[in-house]
Image (tube, rainbow, N blue to C red; front, side, top):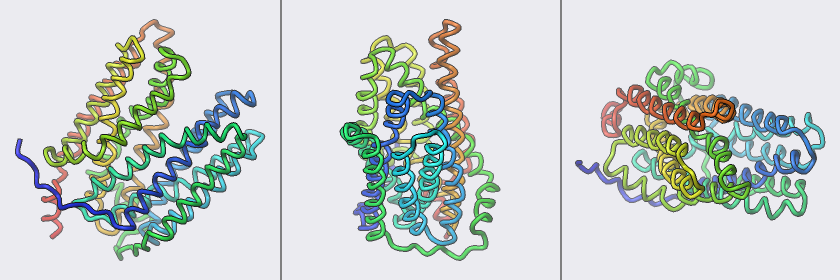
Length: 405
């Protein structure tokens, strides 16, 4: 296979380092408190698990729904003000969770936290795109993903140590982390003035929705995000069935730890040899295959081996998806395109949580233990085929640059 041109050396700027550090803080703060919500309100206070599931689902839907508009707004006023406002609002939301003693109050706090996330999610990706040269974007997205995985590893450890001081202390501490992220970005991230274009705001979202290639790309990715949520649903349930409640620590630790160690070198290896489109299709196939193999895992060790393959796929999907989104976005509409792309995560995540649990319940009722895993593998195969179809007209980096010259 002919090697692709090697990009120039990548030396992160202060703005890029600030985004990487802030992403670590955001993910760490999130995972310091969110896993404790179920522990505190269900195990500690005896609330119904369904009610806490509703709270977490409402937060995700609020965040992903608002992300669509947050990205479009970033094209009007620039990403920095929205990111800083989102960090402050999430601080308030997480802190309020610590004082919640009724379901309506907890729901309101979770909505506020979701609003904060919706304000900084797509604008953060737009900021990464704005401060990074096109040939370095896949690496930059990979580094931010690694920092997020580091936060995913350290956040639960910090939360577990703080829960001994009470859930309120843990929630306030997690909220304060977003204040620190806000300070880091206020000091390092420049105000990126949006380009003057004919389309902006809601018109930018309309442009993204009417972009046939990008619309197909976004909708097909719903299938992948349905699969990616299974680490929290079907895979976790299987791990607990094989090794007990303590299995969740090694499960998440392996997934995040592999991403921290391997994601950047793996991405550099792949980007030298494989086109971005091909890498994305292969990564989704790996995720689907790993889920299918999990159905045959009879021991926790075998399950972890499947999780390793699953992680190799997921660690390639994020940077390649973000790189393709930035590549497809016209000048001045990056935020709108990243916002519109959140639809795939919102729909896939919401459907995935329901589908994963339903498949496990149905398989137990019918006595068909392989049903969930073979179904998920089929979804992976169909999604990979869909991506190949959706991206068939997308030019490579060189072709796109020539087309815009």
